[in-house]
Structures are given as C-alpha cells and as structure tokens.
Length: 355
Ligand SMILES: NC(=O)c1ccc[n+]([C@@H]2O[C@H](COP(=O)([O-])OP(=O)(O)OC[C@H]3O[C@@H](n4cnc5c(N)ncnc54)[C@H](OP(=O)(O)O)[C@@H]3O)[C@@H](O)[C@H]2O)c1
Image 1 (cartoon, rainbow, N blue to C red):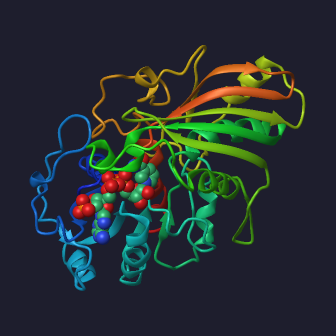
Image 2 (image 1 turned 90 degrees about the vertical axis):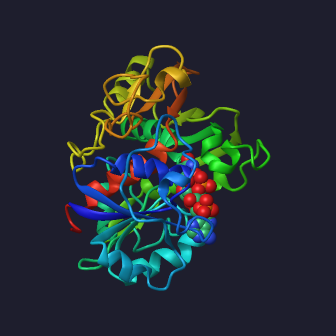
Image 3 (image 1 turned 135 degrees about the vertical axis):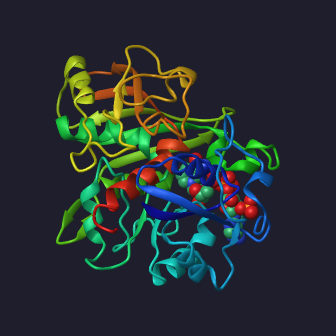
C-alpha cells in the first residue's frame, strides 16, 4: 500500500478524494492537509459537503500546507503520494515543494496543466502522455478540467471514425463545480464561468495531441464554446454539434460512439469503468444517469466502495443535422470522473511506473 495525503481537507474535491481513498486497494490515506483556517482541526469538525455520510477515517488533525516542516511530517507518516485539490494559486507553490521533497503529486488544480514535463492525463484515454515525465523523476501529473470530459469522449470517438473539423458546444455546469462555498450559498450564484471555455478547448487539443519523442504536439480543431452555471447540484452537461470531415449515417455514428473503448493500459484498474462512455436512446437525464458505471445506471451507490460509479460519460439526444453534423448531449459527474475519480484513476495507472 502506498501512503497518501489529500490536500484540501474541507473542499468538495478533497472530500471526494477522502471518500474514494478510504477503502482503496492500492493507496492508504494517512493524512489530510488544509489552509490555516482548518489546520489543527479534527476531520469530524469539518462539515461534510457531499451526499451521504463522511467515511470513518482515523487520521491525525488536519496538517497545515504552510508548515515549513510539511514534507518531513508526511515522510514520518509513511506518505509518498499527494492528491492535490487546492485552488490553483495555492497549488502553484505547494506542489513543487512536495515534488522537490520526493512526494509524487497528482493534481486536480489547473496550475500545471499543459506544461511540457507535467503530464496532463485521462488515464483511460491518453495514458501514453505519462511518458512526458522524464525517467527517474518524481511524478508530477495533472488531471483535466471537469468540463472537458463530456466534450472530449464523444469528440474522440467521432474524430477517430470520421474526423472532426469543428465543434460548437454549450455547457450546463452544476454548482459543485465551483466548490463548497457556492454549494452552501456563501457566495452569489452566477451564470458566467470566466475563462472556462478557453481552458476546456485548450485541454482538448492537448489531450488529443500526438506524442513525438516525449513531447505533446497539440491537435488542431476549430472549436467554439460557451460555458454557463446551472442551478443543479452535480453533473456537467454539454450540448454540442460536431462537424465531421466525411459523411456518416446515424447508425455509423452510433457504432462509433458505442465502440469507444478504454485504453488497454488502464483496463482493469480499480477506478476504470468497463466502458468510459455509454450511449442512451433518447434524452440524457441528470438524476438517472449521473452515476453511470460503464455497464449500468445505478441510483443508490456508495462511492466509497463502488469506485466505478460516476466514472462513465453518458451521451444521448443524438441526431444528425445532415450527413456531416452530429448533435448530442453528454453528461459527466464533475466531482467524480471530472475530479477525484479521474485523479485516483490517474494515480492507479501511474503507480505501475512510480511506486
Ligand atoms: N469542483 C469540481 O468539480 C472540480 C473539478 C475539477 C477540478 N477542480 C479543482 O479542484 C480544486 C478544489 O476544488 P473544490 O471544488 O474542491 O473547491 P472547494 O470546495 O472550494 O475547496 C477548496 C479547498 O482548498 C482549500 N484552500 C483554500 N485556500 C487555501 C490555502 N491558502 N491553503 C491551503 N488550502 C486552501 C480549502 O480549505 P479551507 O476550507 O480551509 O479554505 C478547501 O479545502 C480546485 O483547484 C478546482 O479548480 C474542481
């Protein structure tokens, strides 16, 4: 078992990580760390921000990420892996400190995405991008933006089959995507999500990019996107029209979406769903499809033990607007697949190379 710390003790993603690591077969959660607001508190004193109950964890009081002796302390606790779920500006200084101290860092923060030697990886889509991290170095890797997942999965399926020349997408993003303060009504609701569309489109070209001699060469596609918040708790939905490079029939498009498979490097990992994308006839329904696990649509799940629930993207409302235009809606659980679940899956994959 690899000893692990979660950075972001009180946050929605930090708590999702605690939940998913509580019974994990490869990682043993030994500590959580947070800001000076929460440092020194016992976990039970922090409000639980997710559905259901907090996992029962017997951990030391919350560590302070500002503590100059943090790395030493982590080492004393037998911790060699950090799961980062702090704001980007905090991650910017904190993550290199840990890496320099020999702790492998997997991050949900955006601070180090799209950097040459810091792999940006969706484990069951582009696991080979881990090769951008030099041999023998301590791991520092990032998971993507949560909004990318429901756009990227159908994009890749259609691009591999027909080529995609362009896409036009609109998102409907749940409140949990903005963290616990919005969920608790401590900050005002806003429909706008500044910078989100640019970040998502940039990450799409990176993840879909080719790898030559250890360097990612981003792909090119003409994308347009508008991102907005909706008054729902969980789940990000994308409405998208893809313009194909060659003609296709509806049944060919359905076959391409159905045939989108897990990359073999990730197959069988504890958090990898058997199918990363599931297609439904008819509409995508947030309440019904949010916890898609790659084989079914459970509605009463225990995310602390069912590591595949919420890890599959669901596409539906499929129709052709002519032979080259595919219109669909796509749903992904933002704090599971789009954050903590995707990050733990990345660590499961990376632990085969970085022990
Ligand atoms: N929510 C999503 O769907 C999602 C998806 C993908 C990626 N992400 C990324 O994941 C990260 C966490 O997001 P979240 O939704 O969990 O946010 P959140 O609920 O607002 O939690 C933020 C966490 O960061 C901690 N923090 C804030 N300032 C800090 C500081 N100066 N030093 C140390 N810790 C500090 C907070 O601790 P205090 O309570 O003590 O302030 C809290 O634990 C962000 O980088 C976000 O962009 C989120």
